[in-house]
Amino acid sequence: MIISELNLKDFRNFSELNLKPDNAINIFLGRNAQGKTNILEAIHFISLGRSRASKYSELIRRGETSATIRVKFSKADVSHESAAELSAEKKSRRFLFDGNAIRFRDLVGMLNSVMFSPEDLFMFKSSPGVRRKFLDGEIVQASPVYYANLSTYNRLVEQKNNLLKKIREGLAAPDNLDLWNEQLAEMCAKVVVKRVQTVLKMSAPANSVQQNISGGKEILTVKYEINGLNEYDREELKNILPTDKIFDFEGVTKNLAEFYRKLFRAGKFSDIKRGSASLGAHIDDLKFFLNGEELKIYGSQGQLRTAALALKLSELQFLKSETGEYPILLLDDVMSELDRERREQLLHFLQREKIQTLIAATEKTYFPEESFGKIFRVRAGQIEE
Image 1: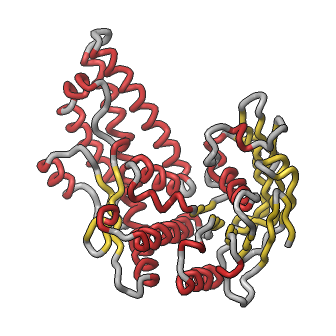
Image 2 (image 1 turned 45 degrees about the vertical axis):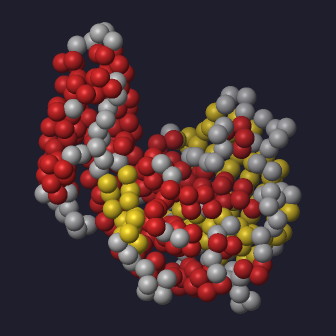
Image 3 (image 1 turned 60 degrees about the horizontal axis):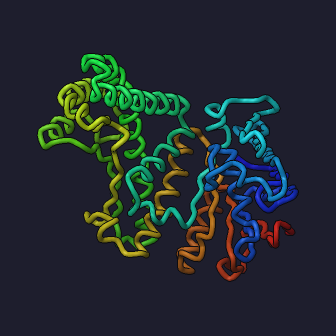
């Protein structure tokens, strides 16, 4: 997957940008708040339909009412164009693919990208929701079916919570929960099994990167944690979930759905008392261990940085295994977080694997003298090679 051209119109601090990146590594140099990150954000937005902005209007250049992002790229050697149109007046976004308007759900997976920014360093010590978002964001780019299943599951949880509140207030009968629990168990199993499979696939490459960067001193283990279970349930679960990435997906999903049916039936009245669903994929977590010790508790700042980078690079490998191509890699101010040896190892890896990469950095000294592709200078929304 290669981006051949990026066009921005009134996006962030760019009034207009026409960029033709190199097929390999592209370095964007400049001081903070000059627009380097905005270039990466535009690509990531048209890839996943989301950004760090809380409102779409924040993506539009100050004083303007609309913005446009256009990306020309090749996928499986076929040329395509994705576009996003943002309106401040309508408070809306509109996506197009090869000139045709598409739904947001159809956008994801068209142009795959992986973005690593300093905020990712906080993932390990953030809430479980942040880690679930990381995992889900990885899977949806490779699986439209998972996106549909996750959306349906989240909608069912919301509807179940509304019903639980009504039952608690005496406005509905407890038996009304049975139908919702049946549907929820089926969809929850599909979401969890796909997450478990993905974690199994990404664990080995993540550990490989961690060991390479640490000189073989650190073993990184990633585990999917199903929360809210007692010891008896955990023992039963061991006989259901796979420990190898190759398994009978339908068979495991069927068994796990039955497992959740029993859990939901057993927790029916405690959920009514609470007014919310206490079990399911929406409360699960990812856990990370370094040499057997939990990373978020015992990991040093350097180990956290290395592990975050290892996870992002394992995401590259996962998407390639699922789609046949590496996604676009976006690195925002990552070089300042690594020492010289680790920076050079990363660049050589990207060159060797022929991964198109866009890197935002403040200092040219972060990069070796040898050529690694194109270097751009970014100043106040203007760019020059």
